[in-house]
Length: 347
Image 1 (cartoon, one colour):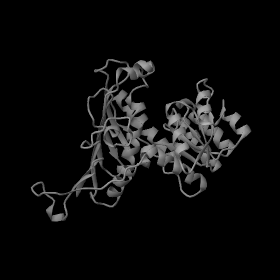
Image 2 (cartoon, one colour):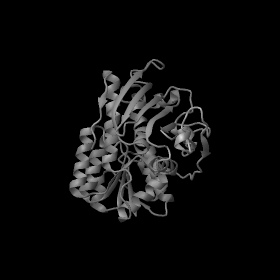
Image 3 (tube, one colour):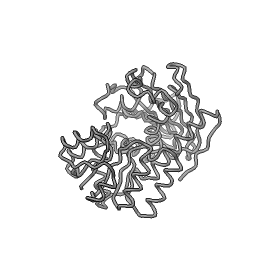
Image 4 (cartoon, helix red, strand yellow):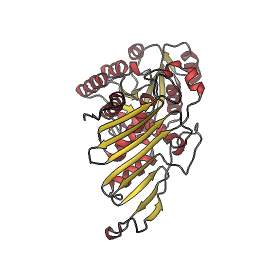
């Protein structure tokens, strides 16, 4: 598959490297008007275009990975749809729910192949956890507890001062990944409550958030989010999938709890009652650790994109999936501002 990458920033460069390493894809072009993109294109041997319009006027790749700034995602996605080219759009699908709906509607009218880059859904670790839940090993779901607690260094904010302002905090930057995971593990989120604080850093944007979740199946959840917490309890620091982060293999990011048992993720420590009559806090659990396969979710996402283009697979994360993650995140922002319970509409 001939794949072009629009946006040669940090995540765009990551995609470029993964395409070059893939057995399924080849890098056909880079699209970026910034002067620094010239050196990146020269190093890869790919042709460089300033815009998608210029690319499509010259060549039609099999697919485009859209890794441009958030406010350009919809415009770039619509250009791919009009050109009849499959698109993998980095999360979030759009910078607003309304714009996300416009893009999804256009893709559906055109029958376009549109994917969203919630790459954690391509994790074999997450797939294993989802399978255990779906098999009924835990019984009817009761609750989930989760956390994304980590410490962003001062340089993170010095390099991009907008991160100190509303919109630059962990709700809009980090939480959308967690929402995708929680929806995959526990089902649709239908209502949220939240409290946010900026006490630790004192910036105009939140640094810590406590969230309550209600799922369509009746399960309840709690989630703690902070970018100023000296803690290893986050997906990045526990999953061992991104080698840029220190790892703590005995820590967990989520615990999913049912009426028969519980599963800690990503250590995959399972505790359950073998017999219905044994279910009592006086009785011991049977315990086991589920064996794991580990692989780079971003690399698997590239290969999945190729399979979707060929017609061998349906999008694992469709435009509507990406839109629903954005809806939940927006509801949490509203809940934190208003102090009210916010209902989340479904696609």
